[in-house]
Image 1 (spheres, helix red, strand yellow):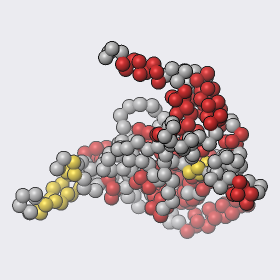
Image 2: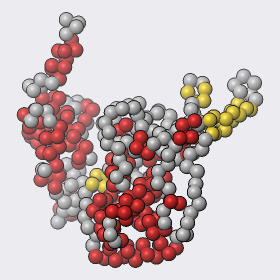
Image 3: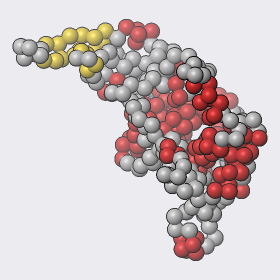
Length: 348
């Protein structure tokens, strides 16, 4: 019947005897962890797509997934505890590997995977202990570059409102999953690290390496704010500079620094602190208004108007550099460098 068609479709999709659903889910989650799927076309799974490189593995994971009650958590546990995921990123005989497995489809080594745009932003927030893990609710509006937030945008023939961030840090620091996505305005940090447009389905993230990524991650306001918060927290919670540095390495790299890294970094920290000014002048973080200029469509006359940014009146900024001494600011610069390293940005 017409009324029962949706129920019939749902029953077919979730039927344990239907192998398609479990295979598709397993294939996508495998791709998330490894950067490549077992069957290369997650959006075109089946006879018209690429054949799986390891069909027996795909079927075994799909069967386990169903037997575990369709538990995504159990599926993650199976994959993360597997020998394939635990393998080194290097091979003792790289030349022989290149000859025997040129397309890297045998999973003989783990191919390093760069964090996605959302993972990168959330990882920095988590390290600085600013990440708001609240689930659900209205979309979050993080603080973005002013030249992007205030750029003129047209919607249905009229000026769109400027991007104004949430007033409270806890609202701005929600997981990237909940960031407001506008088709004509994407947060720069997410855009340069290949976050897909919301208009189309994305079966696999691109992983380009381009110059704007350096500017966004090393010079961007978001990275500097996270580094300041991380440095201030670690120095407040530890008893010495060496202890703060060790804890920083453990947070960002999941390891302790080597004696050479500790000695070199502490020496650099001391010299950097001496080169910084004792105090800094406060900087206005968010404007209260923006002047728009345009051309009248019918007469061609130029005109301007002022857009008042009311929500910015109650804006509470993140931790600001002028409120910290130069010892903390020097450590923040070190944290910023660690944020920009491959060891933090990539999964090995």
